[in-house]
Image (cartoon, rainbow, N blue to C red; front, side, top):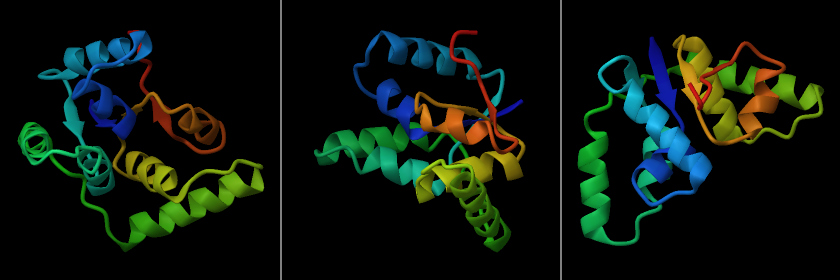
Amino acid sequence: MRVLVDTSVWSHALRQGTDLADAAVRRLSSLLGKADVVLTGLILQEVLQGFRGDAIFEKAARRLDAFPLLQLDRAHYMAAARLRRACAAAGIAASTGDCQIAAAAIEHRCRLLTLDRDFEAIARHVPLHLLPIGQ
């Protein structure tokens, strides 16, 4: 199984979190060594840009080096644009970044591990497979 881990989970895995976030971090930990855990460039950027200090930025970057980046090309960005249009037609105000992440998960046949509820709305209208946190 290939799992794309969203910014919301990585942010908690690399910092102190809440009860829900703790469950997501436990879920991520349970996947390590059992699934292919991957990132996108956008997720990597979103996670790292949240660190203010150079030392913690570098430490987080080193930890994330272990996880491959999904390669995105023109077709992926076209799919993200179509996905955003489908969401808009359904009355969902999905962000460009969320659509890019969802499209990457769909196109690369990944399940998405996220704490961001916006993806639940997206998944009701496109074939995005969310990985349950509590399993």
